[in-house]
Length: 423
Ligand code: LLP
Image (cartoon, rainbow, N blue to C red; front, top):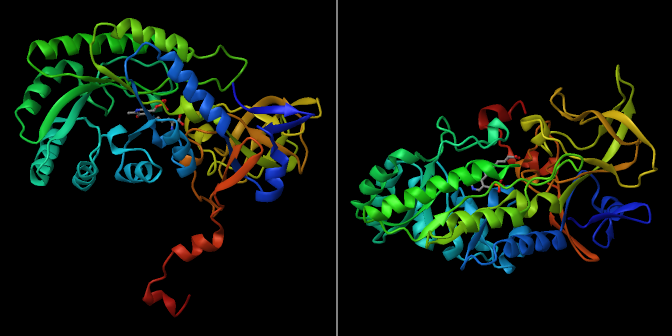
C-alpha cells in the first residue's frame, strides 16, 4: 500500500496535491512519501517478528537521497553500502557505523581504509584476493576487519538477467563449494576476524523458491564451517524481495510470507540475521511526476511525449521495466498509447501500446513505483537538468534535491588553455 491516492478526482501524495508540487517545482520531479517509507519499514519489521535482533541494512543504492536516509535512520535502519561514497552518505544522514555493512565486488584499498577507520559492522568479501588486501590494510591500520564471505549458491533467481547475481557465471561472491577453503584461508590472515556469511541472489524477486533454496544451502554451509572451527555469528540474507509494479499481475510474495520462510529455514542457525532490502522500502514510496509536452499521431498508437526521459528514469530502457503511468487528473477516459521522452534514442520509450488514462498536452502524469533505482540512476544525458526530488510528510513538503540546471552543468566543465582563444 502507498500514500499516492486519488482525492476529489486528482492524485495526491499524502495530503498534498501533486499538481501543487508541479506548479512550484516544475516537472519532471521525483516525489517521495514519508508515510509510505515508514509503512514499508514497519511492515518488514513486523514480518520479521520472532527473529532476535535482526539488522535491517537498507540498500543505499536504491535511493541515496540524504532525506530518505535520514528518515530511515530515525526508524533505526542500518545501511548496506557498496562504495566509500555510500558510507559517507549514510554516516552524514545519521546511520551509525555499527549498522553499516560494506558489500561490493570492487572495494578499493582507500575505501577499505575508510570503512575500517569509521568502524563498519561487516565487510562482505567477494574473493580471496580481496581478503588478502583487506587483511593487509587492516594490519597496517592496527585493527582487525570483521568479515563475512558472500557466497554464490548457484541458484537462478527468476528475474531479469541484468539483476540476477547468484548463478555460477555471475561476477558476485565465491562459489559456495569453495567457501570452506576460503574461510580456512581467511582464518589464517592476521587482519581479519571472521564473523559471518552473506548471500544475495538478485533483485525484484517475485518467487520465494530460489531464495529458500539459497538460504538452505547457506544453512548447510554454516554447519560445515562451524564443524571446521569457524565462528559464524552473522548471516546476511541480502535483499531482493520484489514489489508490485503492475497491479494487474500477481503480486510478489508478501514480506509476511518472506518472514515466515526465513523463520522456518533459519530456525536452528543461532546467528544474528542481517537483511539488505532496497526496493521493498523505497520502490512504491516514490513517483516521477511529468508533464505531457505534446501528443503526436503514430502508425499504430499515438505518441504521448512527456517531459521526463530515459535520463530521468532509466529502468524501462535498461531492463524493459514496466512502470504504471497515471494521469494526475484522470478524466475517466482510457486509450492505448505509446509514452516516450524527448531524448534522441528509440530506447527512450516508457511504454508501448499501453492502455492508460487519456492525456493531452499540458496534462500531468505520474510514473508509479519510482522510488527505487530511479532518481539514483538519473543522469544529465542530452544536457537535461538533473531531476529534482521532493519529500512529502502529511501536508508538508520540501525540496530534498533542487534541480541541477544547465548553468551548473556548463560551469562544471573546464576548457583547457589551448582552446580558450577560440572558445
Ligand atoms: N544487497 C546487495 C548485495 C545488492 O546487490 C542489492 C541490489 C541489494 C542488496 C538490494 O536489492 P533490492 O532489495 O533492492 O532488490 N537497478 C536495478 C536493481 C539493481 C539491484 C542491485 N543490487 C533495477 O532498477 O531494477
